[in-house]
Image (cartoon, rainbow, N blue to C red; front, side, top):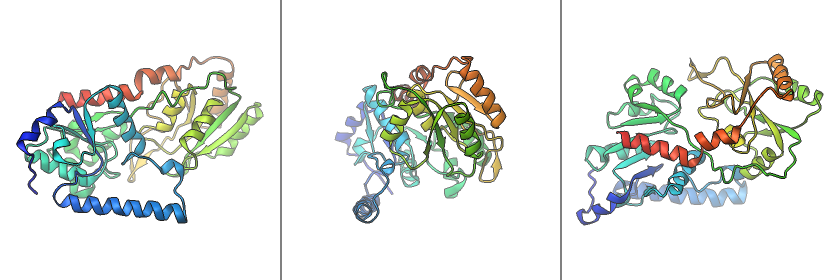
Amino acid sequence: MFYKKRWWLRSKTNDLEISILTDPIPVGLFRITEGLKAGLRGIRKIGGSLRNPSPAYLVSEFRGHPAVTRSIVQGLAKLAVPFTYNPKDLNGLSQAVVVVSGIPALRQMIELKQQGLVRCLLVGPNISADPGAHRGILGSPEIDRYITHAPVCQLVGRFVPTLAPRCVPWAAGVDLGYWRPEINAPRDRVLIYWKQNKGPTAPLEPFRAELERRGFEVSVVEYGSYTAGAYRDMLRKSRLLVGFTRDETQGIAFAEAWACDVPTFIWKNSEPTYLGVAYGGSTAPYLTETTGEFFSNLDEFSKLLSRWEGGDFYFKPRQWCQKNMSDEVCARNLLAIARSV
């Protein structure tokens, strides 16, 4: 498909620093397909709300992975950087583009780069669950950088070797204005975060029983069953979060806990796999000594609790978030990657 910008409008894009895409620009054939998809989404939304309302945690104005897209868009806005998000025509497209998710959008941007309408093409981190899928599109030479997390970079290199030199670690941020502690709220409980959608973890009950044996009031939140507001309210009442998950590329829910100044003890999976391949993944890739600790079994967990109760740890999770994982910091990191191309 041949794309064309009107020459007298092209100068408008010179002021744009970057464009963020999760969907193709609705031009050419995509004008039809994107219009149909938008209509179908509207029908599903109305029908679903009548028959079986969608869980509130799935409802978002942001496409792709909502938390990742939101962080980029709002981070750029907070930095006052000129950008566009899912532009409606070619004149709203910057020379630097990040395709956050969506293979159709990636295919379109590759074609636009071949035609010289895009200078820098960044892709990731939620473009495809299988790096080798879609006829190896992630190996396309038009992709300048693949942005994802360090363990995933190692994995991508095993599936798409030609992409390995272009893979750059990057993490999305959290909104520190929304995810913040409530100064006067009593912190009188331990919150267990239970995520089983990727497969079984360690059994929850022995760890819950150990906490209760020590006199802690315990609450359990299960992934996919809460709204952001409910999760934030639980975090604001908690002294500690204990996390169980199979593996995480980033672990945004844990970062939200840190932003609320809640340290985390995270179960460590010793054998993370992806598509049947063992790799050096993690249940909390960004856990540090200022945000929490790992444990592998009940004995280690009990020892951690004793040390924590004894004041052995110097946790400063919100302070770490302010320095490393705010929306602004992560948007600035993304801009630095684009500018380096």
